[in-house]
Length: 312
Image 1: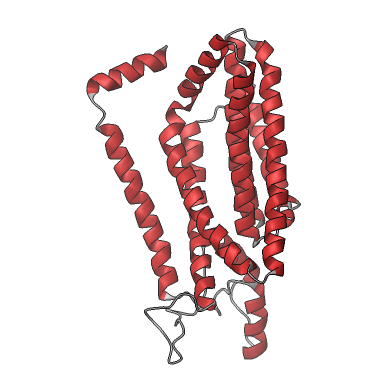
Image 2: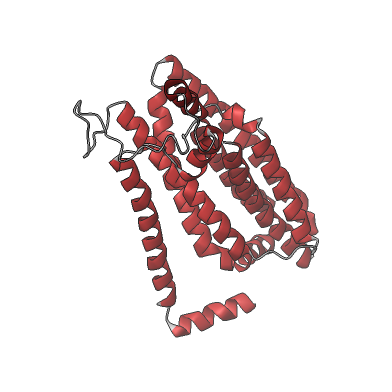
């Protein structure tokens, strides 16, 4: 969970820092630094809103726990997070190249209009989107205990790393390719999404709310394989295996727990879990290919016009 928290916090925080930094930099170029304080007001309000959302999430999850329905809410959050994480990756892949020019056009329009409220709203929406998404993802990877993730060294390390890289980027010390950054972190985020999907399917099958095409004599989902002796997916499974067999596993369950959280690893997956995992990646890559074809199909005249706009 710590590495998941680190990656999510790092990506979301850095994305927000880069965009806010671009806003401040462009305002400086326009000699409109009087708007900087209103950008910071928007950022502060966004952080406050994200904190309030986190509190609401925790209260709601606690309420569902007392009703005995917490597990269903957790599964729902898992599946919703898969959709949101995937959308984030696809959106950033499409927007990363032109994010600077798009921001410049929007900010220039705001400054021309002389609207302080618009500047606050713009910076607020940029940060609050990342903050609310982070809270939602934390709820998914923590099983509902958001406070546990907020206090983990993974989330704190991710925030510190994002602040450091953001500082180095805008002081000119470090040159970052936004496209490369979003592509690399996008792949890792996809693994997290696929892992959440597999976990959600497994929970539904454990609750007997989802059947299987491959079953045991009792009608329960039958594992396609079982390699617990190689690497159990949890240290509890390791303890049970060594107690029952008297043998030691090859790779610790602590590593298996990391692999399960990060890559959706399971030592005894059902047919549906394997299918869901691979179909997820096939579907995402096919969608990326479709988006790539649409981008290439832009008429030549329109490409020239877009290029001229960016140059301006």
